[in-house]
Image (tube, rainbow, N blue to C red):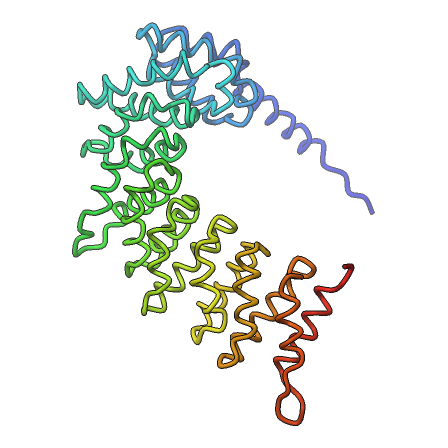
Length: 379
């Protein structure tokens, strides 16, 4: 049987909706509060953009110009206006173009760094976070972000500064020496979560700045080879993002006698995909490595690269390696997985298919026949 909501409950719901509507000011009311210059009204406006963030982000372009005027004037509720812009999110960009806004944010950061006053540093922190919205268009702020990272007084905002550099990308290259200096500092005897988080952010950011690969490559390799598994995993991600520029630092690790380091290095190749063709001669012989993790990553890398001429040639050469039948079998299976794209390996596969084993049966021959069938499909 259908149950009806009691009238008193329905009225209460309507009352709550009415209260919520009253608590959520219109954009015009919000702007008026910000422009009033009254600290209480400004703070109420900031709270409204925070409490109803999702709503006001849809009207950010209408509200942002008024907040920018307040910031440009340097009078009234500048800090509140900055907090409001931050709460409005990237939706401010159409109404707050980089050419006009970034210099204002740089000015606020510079003032905070020079004065060291708590209020100015608070405004500078908001400016820093807003700069992140502008990504590569915020490159003019890099020298100040670099200085900010060196300020002990704002260490709780260092991660956000590194994140800003990451979204700026290649324009953040001048700050890379500072990032490497921090990354190279001794970890210390005591585990400090804040320091570890900062190191993780630095390693992640370095992968977003390909222009500095020559500087950051050795440091990322050190992190990849270290004992901290989380940092090593993040370093693998970053080296993979750097692509071909990171190969000179990664290739020697594939030859490492340390199986963990070898596996991490091949994992980087997986992330690089077709850009890592120079690694093919090193990884194909590991297709049947004793270490299962290395073996798995090699197969993943060959899948990520696809049937490039280098891959097909190297795998075909493995097929005729008689003294390494297991490796030859794995190479055959890999060639079969590529289908018709591996047709240039058919001569080697046909030779393998004719292999005679004990009782005239050979796992190598059977694998080759299966691969040939897959390759010759729809040819």
